[in-house]
Image (tube, rainbow, N blue to C red):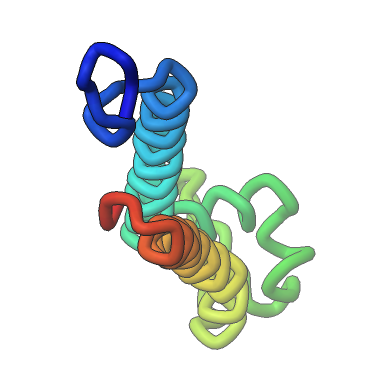
Length: 123
């Protein structure tokens, strides 16, 4: 009890207000990172086939799939006839997408565990 009759729990202390602002800013920052990781992971999974084609083109079709599995057409086109090889070149992008999504889940889970253990808001 203070001389003017106020109780200690009714006073707002600057350090507790600053702590709440920092906690809120941290929660927003972590949520934004998790959101961006989710978007990046979904985009990586969605466009994994296009990313695979780009990677094969950059390295070289003959080099990645084998010279016998690449047919050059008269009009300048290319036919790739090794679906197993193309599927193997897609796996790194599928793995990357899953890692990004799991990293987002881990960020959200760790933030939730931290805030629930300190008695703060759930996020």
